[in-house]
Image 1 (tube, rainbow, N blue to C red):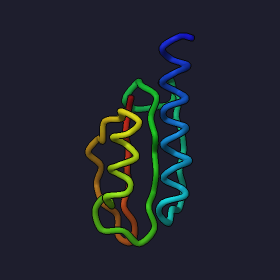
Image 2: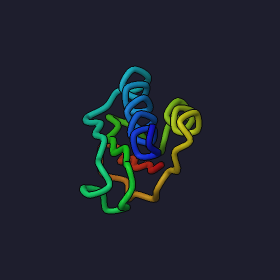
Image 3: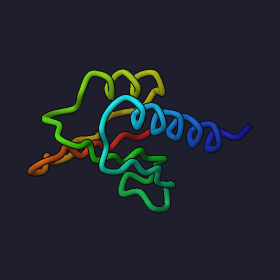
Image 4: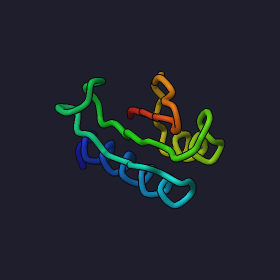
Length: 83
């Protein structure tokens, strides 16, 4: 299996886990060609959250993803993580 297929699977698993753990506005998996980071990217908007909840950090760590700095928004927390 190629590295990129495994990376995509890791990001998708983390996205599904985050949707189950916390209240989200949206959770997307972006291909390298669509991501500003040029890597497989998990892009999530968490509902009513100040900062990144520990549950989300745990899922990102389990998947081996790197949290990217993102500006906070008025009523939600934006999370981006890459392989």
